[in-house]
Length: 319
Ligand SMILES: Nc1ncnc2c1ncn2[C@@H]1O[C@H](COP(=O)(O)OP(=O)(O)O)[C@@H](O)[C@H]1O
Ligand SMILES: [Mg+2]
Picture 1 (tube, rainbow, N blue to C red):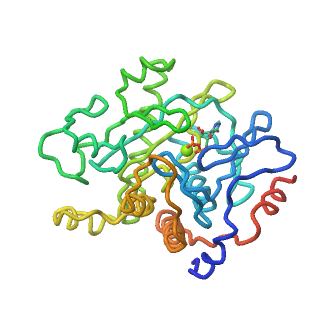
Picture 2 (picture 1 turned 90 degrees about the vertical axis):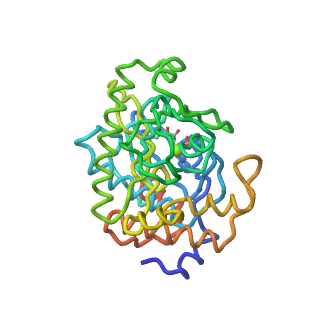
């Protein structure tokens, strides 16, 4: 188990922007820096944390936790949907099939919740009674379970812009995706979500909602890419006190970046302009929660590799 001392000591050595001599220019996402090597893609999961579509700073060990959790689920869901993972040469690195990303985020939601502008709760609170083409009954409350999980596609906004939740029809109008491609992804997404829900339940957790990305492999096969059932792509709540808290009108206890999101919202930040700096206490608490989530979700205790990340990764990749 990671101690607070270990986390605190790691605060100045987090994995931020990665350059790896010998691998060429990185493609920088908000959280991952990747390098294309032939038909493969080396994905370094950094310690950057993003919320509201903005990078907020770094959380110690977050990259290792996220990478290990994604690998755990990629390895256990290959029978449900083909995926990009080939190997994990380092705790923070995945070697993947390089794909052409599909222009959609396949979001699956089982609860009326969320805090960002694309969330189903914000829409419902604002009076919407259909969301991405799904009808929602009157009289629902925040954090209430939906009658059944629904697929709510989201557009991939350009950098700096915010994603938008749209219906299947709207998405097909706006992109070059075929209906067959969309439906194949939607089917994978729902099957993965049901599997994730069962796995979470077995460990006392609720898989609340999650986002899947798909890509086309060099052979033209639709594959799950990016990450799966990590705290960055998924919201998890503790199951044991969900009902009591819901009835009392309290927020569920969550194991994800909702902690950081809420802390910033309490400071009046909601995604516009530069974010306020994350306090060290918040970064330590967030790191503890990420590590906790890995052990709660996978049953594996998070060790955390404290060695200097860049030399370690270079060595692991034989650079
Ligand atoms: N196997 C893959 N092939 C090609 N692109 C991928 C693959 N896996 C992930 N990606 C892309 O790499 C990026 C990952 O970085 P991330 O920090 O998550 O980006 P974002 O800022 O878009 O969330 C995303 O744009 C994702 O679509
Ligand atoms: Mg991403």
